[in-house]
Length: 212
Image 1 (cartoon, helix red, strand yellow):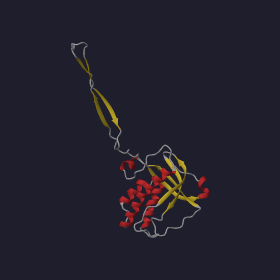
Image 2: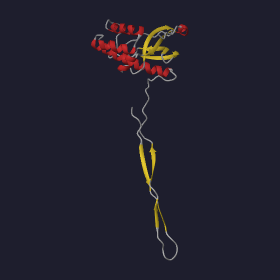
Image 3: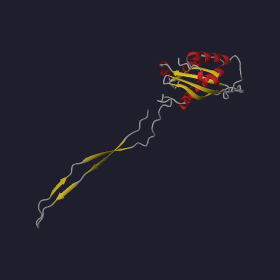
């Protein structure tokens, strides 16, 4: 972390005073020198402040923060997809990276999706981009769990994405990542995607919101 520097300006003041006697004959002259004094003046640094971690969990979790986290997670997912498409295999690195951003039932589902990429399906763009997931509302916004309603856009991934069903919406659950995941530094956020599935918009408010 870069901390603002501090420059110290030292200014020394030296004063001397002389006194002489009166009359025609000048008396002895006494000269007194004031003791030196040093004033310390702090000059503000012009260096820009160090930006805070954009993924640190704020006191109040809002949709903008969750969207920022999701963009980071799905950027890693996009890297995995591009590697699988390029190598035509789901290797250890792809599996390991997927496990850095997905957990619980969603991890198994995402690994199955990677295998499915090699078995055919909708034609992918060359190279495929990242899927875009946008939060529409938050159902739960705790520091250990976030549940959101979100829309997904695959237009950067596949050549002709299926039309979205306006009656459906995604139900997405984020949970805090493990200490092991955070220590490896692949996932820049403190979150993993625990579940992601489509539900009816009409039933969204009554849908159970899992946090574990």
